[in-house]
Structure formats: structure tokens, C-alpha cells
Length: 519
Image (cartoon, rainbow, N blue to C red; front, side):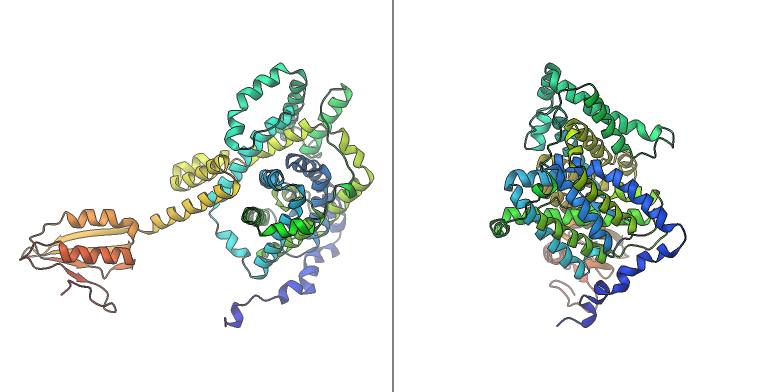
């Protein structure tokens, strides 16, 4: 029976104070007005991203709005992080697209539902803090791999072409895509809309502050829509089915299929990526303001509740999104009210103005996602990382390439495995020092952490010692000696010296039994 202190305490999760505390700042003059204004800013940023992520994921556009609404109205009311905003994220687009294509749209809700249940369990078991132990290089490599796949896939989306299934297939198909685009007037027009959207997103931060009050994604999509409508361009637009018609709760057959290995692997990938992205976003948001800090376990439970609701509704999975969260903080939000109200604005838009989605060109949304993919690439960090920590840079690049070559889940596992191997290699530092005493006796001292990873170098030094001299092997200064290394050293001590020469003597810690061949 584990000690009582090791068991999860549920009191902090159900305490009303946990819900009330972040809202106390509303009593201060002007805070309510500022939070309401911030909610409008977040709504304007979230609207095109919710729709764009849904379209890029291969699901109805309305499902992206459903996830944004749940992220505001449900997760916004729960304790955890007071100011970060949740919704559909570009980081999960590739994984959702693959899941929908492999298992069908009906299974998406079941997968997201189980993901939410796992997140709730992890939060209640106080596992939130352990996600902070994931190597930053693996996370950056994961996001870079997602960004590369997102960019490659949306290049096809900008021209209305069918994108290949694999990452390598997307790369191999780029020359043919370029030829087809330049020879097809309709594809060239769509590509122009997409490239124009990207240009607006890139140039928008350089415009005067008065202009930049309009969020860049909204401005880019609005301008692209206006150009396409004004010039009557023949481009594909978003398909609108209505909010209620788009919601497809999982059926009993979908829930029963959760037991398959392939589906469980997808669920684990969803859980790992959504949780890590949310908690890393929380750490970044905490550095942007001086308000209450994030409680990681509560935030993981909140994300789990949100994904459970999204799963019941058959919507996209959610994470905390750094773009919306930073917009919330920069707009002056002080309490969770801003993120809650932003969910209300999304709900009103989806109910009252759904037809407005039908005039948005798909190429414009693809341009928004291409730009979002580039922002996931750690371009500014990779060169300093190579100069200072080459091993970490190798983990980052390997993870990103593995995701492109294989898939999301296998790529992340490869990155985690390489990070663990790198850490094991770096901590396994052993030194062999040889000194000669009067009379010809050699004292060989081993220090550090002697593991099987260092055996080749250790044995190379020991086997080069003369076999006709008395030798003392001193292991008393070794911090760690694993079984493989101990066994190998014992065998070396028995067999090294020639017959007739004094056997190698091993000195270990007093608490340890003397090994064979020691005096």
C-alpha cells in the first residue's frame, strides 16, 4: 500500500477556490472592460485559425469552430493556467489528417474522447510536471517535423491538388506539382491567392501600429476573400454544412474499435503531443505576464476535460495555442474571462453567420497554415544550438527528419530514444589513470560512471598494460559500476597477466564483496 502522501489529492481539483481565485482581479477598476476587449482580439485571431486547421485536417470547417468554442467556454472556466487560450492547433493537423484518412471521420471523436480521458487521469495522478522533463530538443524537433509536413501538405492545398500520403511522397511530388500549377490557369490562380495571403502575413508586422490592431490572420484571409470575390476568381471556397450538421458524436462501433493497436498508438500520440504542447505553451505564457502561475496538473486535467467534450461532439482535438495565448496577454487580459468570452463570440459567429465561411477561398486558409508551419521551424535557434550543443541539435534534426520520413508517433519515439541515449552517453563518463610505484607495480584507478557504454575505451586502456607487471585495479572512486562493466573487469583481472606473474588485484568499496582474482 503506497503512503498516503504519494496518492493524488483530489481536494485541490474540486475546491471552489480553485475556480474563484483567478477572477478576483475583476474587482479592480477597468479590468472587466480590458478583458472584454481582449476577448474580441482573441476571437479575431482564433476565427481564421480554427477554420484553417479544420480544413487542413480534412474535416468540416465547423468542427474547428466547435473545438474553439469548447476551448473557450469549457476549458476557460477550469483552473490551471489563467490566461492561455485553447483550441485546434496547427501542431496536431498532420496527425488528425492521417487519423481521419486511416480510420474515418467517425473514429476521430472516439480517439479524441479517449485522449481526453487519459489526460484527466494523468493530471489527477500528478503527471503534469513530468511532461516538463521531456527534452526541449525533442519537442522542438517534433514541432519542426510537424511544420515541415504542414508546409508540404498545404503547398498542394493551395493549388487544389491531391497531396501524397507520406512525407517523402510529398517531397517527391513537388516538381510535378510545380509543372501542373504553371500549366493550369485555375491552379495558378489559387496559388496566387495563397502566396498573396502569405505575403500579407509576413509584411503585416512591419505596418504601423494603428493598422496592426487588426490581427494578421484575419486581415490576410479578409483581403484574399475580398480579392477573390471582387475579381470573381474561379477558386474553391470553404464548404459550409452548419454547426449542428457538422457535429458527429462517435457511435458504439467507433468506441469498440478503440481496442485496436493502431488506434491506441494514435491515441498515445495525440495524448503526448497535445499534453506536451499545452504545458510548454503554459510555461511560455507564464513568462509573458506577472499574474498567477500555471498549475500544471490542473491544466492537464482542464485540457483533458476539453478533449473529452470535443470527443463526445466528434470535433477536433485541442491544445493550448501559443498564438492565441500571446494575443490574449498582449491585449491586456487579466483574468480567464477574456478566453471564456472569446468562446462565446465564436459560438455567436457559428450560429448567426455560418454562410460567411462559404466565401473564404481554400487557398487563403492554406496560405495561413503554410505561414503557421514556418513559424514552427526553429530557424533562429538551430545555428546557436549547433555551436553550443551539437548533441541537442542532432536530436532536434533527427526527430524532425524521422517524422517526415516515417510518421508522427514513430518520429517522436525515435527522438525520445536518441535523447535518452545521448543523456546516457554523456553521464557515463569514466577515466582510467595509470601510475607506477617503486618496484614496478602499476596502480590503475578508475573514476566516474563505469557503464557498458564506456567499456570499449576502458578495455582498450587496460589491455595495453604490460602482462608481466603486478597491477592493482582501484575501483573505490567509481560512482557507478553497472553489472556488464563489473563482470568484464573481473574477467580481465583473471586473464590479463601471464602465468607466473602476480594476478591483478581489484580493490572495490569496503561494503562490496571481493571479486574473484582479488587479493
